[in-house]
Every structure is written in structure tokens, then in C-alpha cells.
Amino acid sequence: MAGALSRRGCIKIRGPQLRELLDSKCNILFDCDGVIWEGEKAIPGAIEVVSLLKNQGKNVFFVTNNCTRPRDSYMQKFTRLGFTDVQKRDIFSSAYCSAVYLRDFANLQGKVFVIGGDGIYKELREAGVPFVESEPETPGMTISDCPLHSDVKAVLVAYDEDFNFLKLAKACCYLRDSECLFIASDPDPWHPVRGGRVTPGSGSLTAALETATNRKATVMGKPSRFMFECITSQCGADAAQSLMVGDRLETDILFGANCGLSTVLTLTGVSTIEEAQANLESDSPAKQNAVPDYVVDSIGDFLLALKT
Amino acid sequence: MAGALSRRGCIKIRGPQLRELLDSKCNILFDCDGVIWEGEKAIPGAIEVVSLLKNQGKNVFFVTNNCTRPRDSYMQKFTRLGFTDVQKRDIFSSAYCSAVYLRDFANLQGKVFVIGGDGIYKELREAGVPFVESEPETPGMTISDCPLHSDVKAVLVAYDEDFNFLKLAKACCYLRDSECLFIASDPDPWHPVRGGRVTPGSGSLTAALETATNRKATVMGKPSRFMFECITSQCGADAAQSLMVGDRLETDILFGANCGLSTVLTLTGVSTIEEAQANLESDSPAKQNAVPDYVVDSIGDFLLALKT
Image (cartoon, rainbow over all chains, first blue to last red; front, side, top):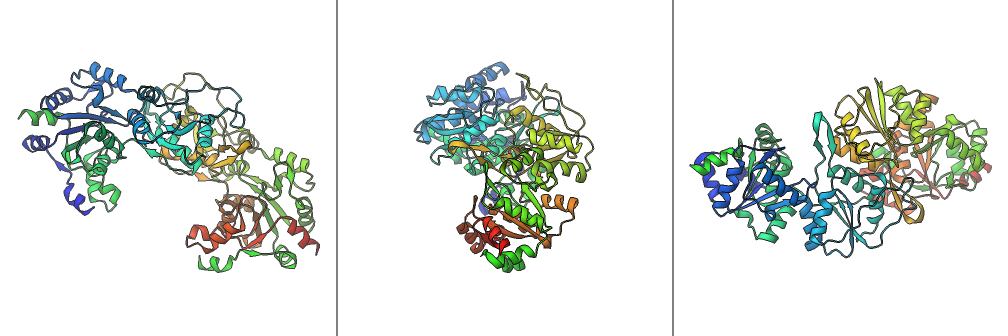
């Protein structure tokens, strides 16, 4: 960790310095929400930055823990917001990466039982990963008398607004078989919704299942390394030539550090420069790993740098 | 801990030694399942042991983490199985203790939002603790548009077969208020059901909420000390004059140790003498605390001892 510590400086960067950093990297990874868009509005400069980087021949990737949409729906959003150069293959969501993991990495010997929504089901279908179709609720049915599928060999947990006790109990029963894989799309504990309310995240549902089964899920989303392994397996990206740009220290920046990437914190989202500084000064190794190499005010700074 | 270590010996005890131990205690606390009954059958000797202890003027208490039944239902079960001397006031279930905590200990300034079943609702009603009535599901309603109650000042989580995403999300919203109490009936992670299947326990549902809120619940059930505080507050029981008899090391025996009670492990339930010995030889303070002072084969040994 000493080498990493001396390297990560939380350095405010812009202009020629930022240009030099971008010139030195082939692969630029962006988180989406709070980095390139905010809800239904692109962050100023984001559209041009993605185009300029692509025109320079760089690989641009979008890595997001949001598992609720399939990549086709992301493509629609990119188009709707005015991005013209994004391809489906550039998008690495936790739903897509979960499907890739089950198809290419997990040696799955049966079907997947899903706690999750449309984004998950669509990516599994597109990847050709066999899964148990979502089962309609039967009032009064309990775990004692409900049918279970003998060919389930993995449980995948993601954000699921139709989560209920029977789904949780079924997943517990499947996971009694120690050979049944236990996968979580992302570790996000909660998300903000309208009016100051909150909604539980995949991490919350995963915690229920981890406690009930005394097992730990293999997590696909940031800060786990798997999303970068997924990019590497499909595009041959090299960590030393890659840069991660994100707005959350504990997911995006820690993900970059875990994968050996250079990292930039952008201040248009969740984390503040004060929190980054506090991590820098912390004695906790976990917090030290969530210190960005560099800090920018916004992706707009990239545009200024690229135009100099 | 050194004193406790030298005291707890995992000593197999019977006959006059066991008689002496029982003679030295005023209060005998029994776990129910696996100790005095097994499903719908009393463990041989249990009925007579309870009667004999009561006839000797001892206080006999039943302490159970099962929160699904109100005490009236426990009374019916005691009667059905042939116990004749049990009073409702002898029963300290996690549902009842949760209601007592909210009524007498918590300085509750509003209503309780419940994740739980009939056992919880009935005990709250009987204790006069105000709560939000169970709300019927409205298809398609989400946390963005559902009504919330401004007077909720506590969330109580227990075993709930009607648990669903919206309940979890509502509880998360209530717990955003740091003054809203967060109570869990018991920490049990799962329970066995018919046919080798399992069902998630209160501890599983609590973990989902703890993760989503980044808060820790105050737990009522064993091994937390509160059940003994509840007994003490109602009957003035003294720890030095009390004996805890249970079948699970990590709940019953640890509960006894946490409360400063003498403890007896009975081998008619979940834990084995090998597990008790392994805890005795462990370097982990948590496991050392889950070593019983004494071990009996069955509550039947109490009967032999009391009749000598």
C-alpha cells in the first residue's frame, strides 16, 4: 500500500496537466450518473468530451452499478441526451457484467434463480444464460409447499421492487447447496428517490440473503474488480493505460484503485473534495484506497483541456 | 473475562450435584423449543420438572426468541402438551419483550411501524403501544407515491412472511429520522421448515434494513441481555440466583453468560457437547462466552435429581 499511498495525491488538475494525463491513457472509463449525466440532463461538456476522446482513437467505456436497465435502454438514453458516438459494446452495467460472468466465467451447470428486475432478465436472455422465469405470486403459498427447481445452480441478487419473503426463502433453499453460486449485481445499499425518500439497493437485499445463508455473495459491481476484468476480457484493456473517472469515492475511486487504474474524482456528483482530503489524511487502509489521484470540478474541465 | 473463564467448565452434571445446583437458585429460565418441547411433544420429564420447581416455590420463566405467537397462543400450547402450572406472566417471548421495551423502556413519542406478524401485533395491542395497522398491498404503488405516517417514531422488525420491498422501503424512510427507534425482535438468521427447507429469520430481514440505513438495530431476543432485564423489571429476579437452561450455545448459553447467570446446556436440541467443548478450547472470547457451566442429557435429568 505504501507505493499506492505515495502515488495517490488528490491533486486538483486542469489545462495542460489534464491534457497530458489524457494523452497518456488509451482507455477512459466513466461512471454515468453524476459524471456524464444528472438524471435526464447531460453534464455540460460531456457529449463533446466523449466525441473528442473517441475521435482521438481512445476506447471510452461506461461502467455503472445501475442494474435496472438493459444496455439497449442505456443506448436510448445516450441518444436521447445527445450523445452520438456511444456503442452498445462500450456499456458495462452491473446487469450486463452479471450475465457475462455467468456465461463466460462461472462454469454454470444449470439455471439461474433471479432476484431482480427487467434489466437483469433481458441481459441474461441476450447472453443465452438459462434462468428460472419470474414466477407469479400465489397468495397463501409458503416455502413449505412451493415448487423448487432442481436444476438451479446459481442465485443472482439485484435491485428488485417485487422482492418478497417467498423469493428470499426460495433463494435460501437453493443456496443450501454449497455448489449453487451466489452472485450479487452490485453492493449499493440504497438509492435516493423523489421527495427526499430512499429505496433499498441490491446491497440491502443481498445482506438479507447473506445473513440467512451464512454465505457471502460474489459481487459484480464497483468497487469489485470484476467490471474491469469484463472489459479486459472483451477489449484487452491494460490497467496501466486506463483512467477511471467517477463521482463516488467508495465505489468509483476504490474500484479504480482495486484495478490498478489512475483515478479522477469529478465534483458534479455525490462525493466532495473535503471527503477525498479526509480519506487522504485517514489512517484506515480502506479509506486510503479511496483517495483519487486527481480531482476535477466537472467533466467540462476535460473539454477545456482537450481543446488547448 | 478471566474469572468467567475459570468458572465455566462445561461440566456434565446429574443426581445430587444437579439437585444442589437447583437448590441454590430461585429463578429457573427455560428456553422452549428443544428444551421443554420438541414441536408438538413435551420432552419426557419436562411437565413434572416445571411442576416440582414451582411447588418448591421457585420462579420458572420461559424465554423464547420465537416472535410468531402471542403469549395466549403459548398458553394454549402449554395446556395442549399437558403443562398445568404455567402462567401467562411466566412467558417472555421476543414479541412480548419488544412490546414491553416500547411501552416501558423506550420513551416512545409516536407510533411503531411493524415488519412482523400476528404475534407482534397482538402483543403491541395488549401492551397499549400505538402502531401503524398492517397496510394492504396496492399493486403498482412504489415508495415514491405511497403515503407515510408522520407520527412513526419506531420501526420494529420481526419474522414476517408478508415481508416485501415496499415495507422495507417504508422502514428505510422512517429510519432516515435519527430519532426514530430501530428495534429487532430477535437475531435468528433462519429456521428449519419441513422437508429440509429453510425460512429466513428476523435477523435476515433486520440485516436488509441495517444495510439500507447504515444503522444498527437494538435487539430484544437472546443473546441480548434485554429479556433478563424484562424479567427483572417485572419480577425482581437476581442474576446470582438465576439459572438459564437452553439447547443453543450461541443464543441461550451466550444469553446466560451476558446476563451473569449460571447456565446449563441440555442435549435434546440444536447444540452438541462436542460444540460446547470446542468453544471451551477456543481462543475466541465470543466462543468462550458461549461455554455452558454445566451440561445435562435432557431436562429428564432434572427430574431424577429433584426426586433423589
